[in-house]
Length: 270
Figure 1: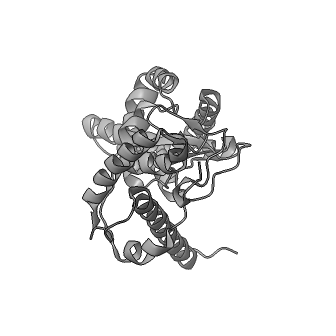
Figure 2 (figure 1 turned 135 degrees about the vertical axis):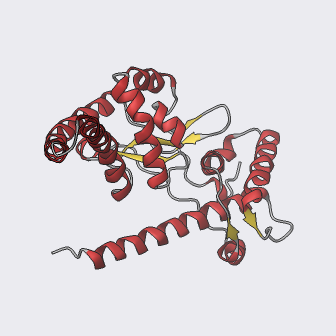
């Protein structure tokens, strides 16, 4: 079967689920995630000791109730503030993840935002700190992408950036839809739908033709709820989906470049 423009990038090594979802990025193993967590705990011990000491000095000026509240807030800020701030500023990395070669990404493999990092951090208080990480390990074992509960809630997963497998090329923009995609208004496409589309396109060529047609139209109906105006009539669903994915990736890239330029202006490197 001849591959269309929307089926470039799949190799026999790609993992394809029963719903034609190809897992493009290798998810992190439990061992690497535990290593990353241990390193982050060491960082937290050092940084937390300094912050808690300063909080204790501040709390000594108040009565016991206020002092206890200050210490509790200080501990929460350390436990949540560190991963949330690091993952937001570095687009998915903490010191532990940098050392282990890991990164947090959205379900559609895009960069995470503050919302994703905050959700992971808040759920992490329960599953990692209060319950000792047991729910996180159980969830990671049961999840196809090794997700802990915080990842499930945030719509993210952790990937290995130092894997041996090559990344598949990005979905190309169908030339005849480039003008429409550039001028279209993209709303908030749910991460799950975006991930399904990004994975369906390269896997489509290996699907049963009837199932392929049905799945493509289902995904197109979901995507068009967040895209306006509709594409020019007469286009195959896979071409429209490819245009949406390619344009979404271009906009994400442009936004990241603008943010990087702003960071450079505010804190130029030597």
